[in-house]
Image 1 (tube, rainbow, N blue to C red):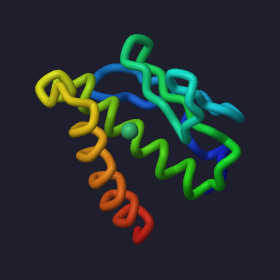
Image 2: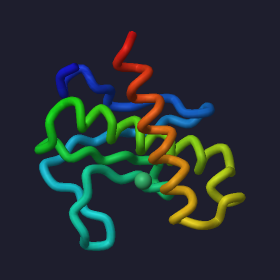
Image 3: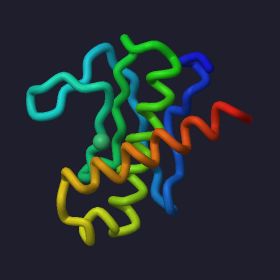
Image 4: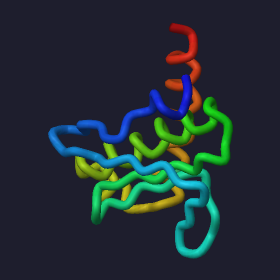
Length: 100
Ligand SMILES: [Zn+2]
């Protein structure tokens, strides 16, 4: 899948999540592969990674968006725990998606 085929926005539980593609993505001053901002419902993806990595990162950030918008991020209320849940789901779902 090429960068151009990745979506510019996605509906998540009735909310429109914007997706921006940038050469460098930072969270709290640290460079990262991607980010999700709950305040603006915006995902950012680092375009210097290869397409497979961008796709996995997009999936990862969508999972954060799902947990946020559904209210489950508040229930978990622990960024490390949320990150662990998102990483395992990302790994499994990305592999399943690749096998289509
Ligand atoms: Zn994450």
